[in-house]
Length: 283
Image (cartoon, rainbow, N blue to C red):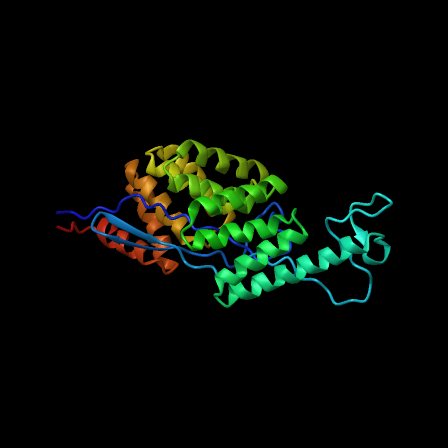
């Protein structure tokens, strides 16, 4: 009996370590987490590579003695970002320092694998600065890691409520709705992400893979091609685009993509090439 490779759903969450989780238009990191997906005789088992860090809002801060701007504080003169030396409300400045300390503690605990302490620290940070979208984002990620999907979803939505341009939270919400089987909502959030970050390779990968699973292969091919355009190092995009070509009877292009994935070290590419592109039928 010929083995069949099913259309894989391989949608890792993308979690960057930066001062701004909406980033630039490219929305790409060099250390995007890759999924681990095993394919065996028509069945796929999916696991997600655990990311080693949450968003760290303190990264790239300098130690200069020059007064720094404090995001989120409004000075008495009406400036959106007040310098430390010009803040008249000392309680507000103190709360911000406390919020930053708790946030830093949260990222440290997360790196050390102490997730309960990380959760407590991020929540404490929100007590002092309730409009910190990064803290909500990190709580969403940790609860996702723990399998508490409903809590994760609520925190990601809070992050988007505060920062509508948070493409990382938007794509995570899309994934969560996909996992709930709500394709309409998943598509809505993926579309929002594309509108905000039109060069974000991962969202095209997610949406294109979802289209493929729903047998909408033309749109799947379009999205996966864009995923490769904006993130050429994602071998999973070649695997899934190859599957879309395979199901549209274009075995030549399917094999080309699978061979590319194989050359990138993806074992699923090698498996597909051996089964479908070697010229030998396997029984």
